[in-house]
Length: 241
Image (cartoon, rainbow, N blue to C red):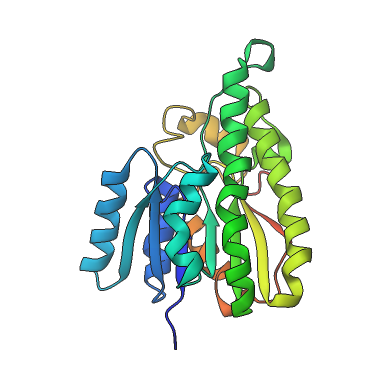
């Protein structure tokens, strides 16, 4: 059986790294992507290899369509990527009344245009294999909204529409497309924003989620067992919504 290849964008972050390790445990060759933390992506790939898994690191800016195509070209031509986890994302939080055009456009560019720039060139090779899994990492903010995150909520909500439309386009090809919408997940991006008292107040389960819980859900959606799940926005948020 040919080993499946997975691309995890933003693979050097907390959630991305956990997903990379989890997919590697499923005997999948993992492409650990990063833009500004390539040394960290390389370290994750090396750690996976040392644990008996298969991985390598890639570096490109997901907002640059030409750069993405150039780096992904070998897999477009020779080794189809059958699993895409669009996990790259950034925060540029501010109330909309005080939000700069740069803060708006940068977030949209990474989360939404990045989804297109990475996914579109990989689709035809994936379609030809008649098997695929596309996971778009969203957020509870894309469902409920969040003060100070109009840009982020807009990008993630748009990703929900793209997820549902692409799922319809690919359903007959045995390719599923889903989005995962985490709530508060413990890690570097949330440690300064949510203290324990606030978490207990806004999360019914009264705790933050873990990156391993998000990774486990991602791995399941990438598996053969999840073949009938597509076009879904799946929350993992401790009953917040």
